[in-house]
Length: 115
Image (cartoon, rainbow, N blue to C red; front, side, top):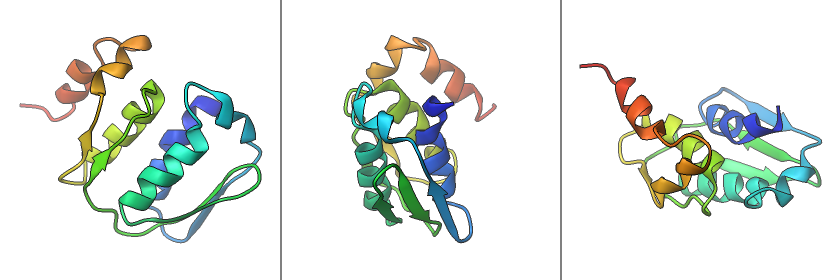
C-alpha cells in the first residue's frame, strides 16, 4: 500500500477539505524522498500541503498545471500523470523514469483519452 501514497496525495489535491496521510515516514527512503517530492510538486500546483513528522496534510483546492519534477522516481511520474488527466498544462519531466516498473506506461496512459 505505501506505493499508493503519491497517487493518494494527488487525488487529495482535488478533494474537499483536509486529507491527512500518517505513518508513512519510510517513504522518505524510497527511490526518492517521496513525501518531500509529493509536497513540493503539489505546492507547485497551488495546493496547500504540509509535511508532518510521519506524513502529509493536504488541503484540497483547484490545482493548476505546472512542470512536474519526477526526481527520477517512477511512482512520482505516474502519480502526477493522473493529475494531467483533468488539469491542462501538467508536464512530466524525465518521463522515461517509468520504464523501471512499467515500460509501456505512457502508451497505456494515452489510451485513457480514447479516440
